[in-house]
Amino acid sequence: MSTVEMEVLSESDSEEFFASEADDDPDRPSRGLNSISEAIEAIRRGEMVVVVDDEDRENEGDLIMAGALTTEADMAFIVRHCSGLVCAGVAGAVLDRLELPLMVRSQENEEALRTAFTVSVDLKPGTTTGISASDRAKTVRALADYSSEPSDFRKPGHIFPLRSREGGVLKRAGHTEAAVDLSVLAGLPPVGVLCEIVNDDGSMARLPQLKVFAREHNLCLISIEDLIRYRRKREKLVERTAVARLPTQWGVFSIFSYKSKLDDIEHVAMVKGEIGDGVDVLVRVHSECLTGDIFGSRRCDCGPQLEQAMKRIEMAGRGVCVYLRGHEGRGIGLGHKLQAYNLQDMGRDTVEANVDLGFPVDSREYGIGAQILRDLGVRTMRLMTNNPAKYIGLKGHGLAVTGRVPVLCPITPENRAYLEAKRKKMGHIYGSDMPGSIAGILRQEEAAGRAQQQQQQQQGEEEGQVEGQVKGQGEGKEELLQQQLNGKSVGGDGSPLESTAFSTPEEWS
Image (cartoon, rainbow, N blue to C red; front, side):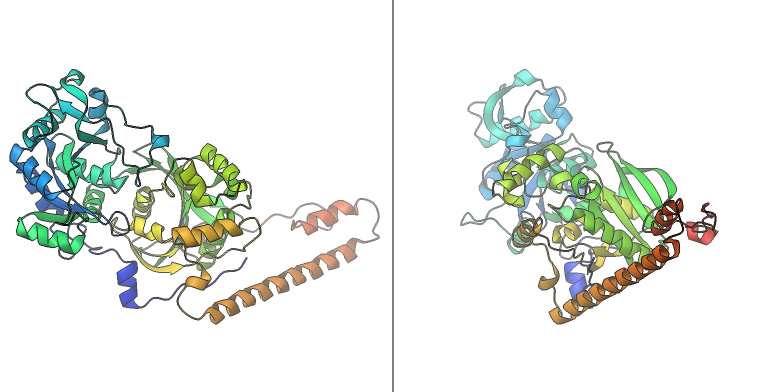
């Protein structure tokens, strides 16, 4: 199987595209922003903060404040400067207690980022139409009031509750989760008001405009990435459950099992050698693919990528392969992935099939993988991936990606359309898209191919010698031949010889 060397990045390129800012100090804010501690204090005082997400996600800023402390004046300010669709991020337990169901089933949610809208509501007691700033502020405060009951609200209404993902921004890096997390961190009920900030012409405000807005109104400006770092430093969402020595076809590894505290899913990390200072570790974060990894499906390149990653780590003598379960079909599950196969057979590509089934193009989250790497001691890594979203997903967890190692696998008639769709529609980067000399890459490919041919030729000659030794030696020799061809060590009488493969303690690490 062909491979290429690590993509070489200049120091400035590495910082711009891979390294997470403030990696040595998770409490230090990104350049030009306020700290999370400042924002929490502002929320506790009943003030608003501006929260921006990743430029590769919505690239938008929301006004956020604690629902329990929202006043009529606050709501009027929000309506004046935002899109007008005032939402409330609410913890799932609160929504369940108030009997507020999702607006549409998860499978039918076609919103771009699958934001979990519930039915809209207005507070009944003490309000009129529900649309005024005063009425909407009362509704939000009632959502945050532990004494409120389901009968206190009428549906539909003018406040749109959003169901926050359990685990908050560590599970989903969205404004909904940020609103709930900030309220909880401030010691307040898990309900936060949020609304997207817009420019005077109605367009969405981006970071340059958001900085001006925050400065003009004396508001804290923070990022979800910084909030992830803040929580990651203080909370641990994975638990190491076991570790064992595991001989594999590639070499001897240490296998670590982890359980997620969010959903009890168990994940695995295969570790080679000593991680030591955690710097410049060769890493693969691999999403579970039962059909590709176990059954050798040729629809995708998952199995070959996993095999290549394990080989590379074994050759390097030091590295980690994190195997994330629950990622089937880019997060849609095994059954839905098989349905997507049927759609692909009818002409849809891998991206269109997921969308046709009512799912996002990619539902995977990498926060759990990042915490596993942190637990193992990894700090900076050379990441084996073709997927830019993977290193974006690892940002904000105290990890820095200092280089990308492409994982190039053979293109076959069965996977050609799959790989092309990922390149064109998901931004996956393959050999021809990388900076540097394509001729040099091709020379490496040709050299790898020649080496493989020589190895196969040598193996064929050895098999021929073995066959010649046993040919004509009578009945009973066929078994000896088969044992030798299978690589088993046998004595002259055909009995197995004791293996010396793992005879020293150094080889057990």
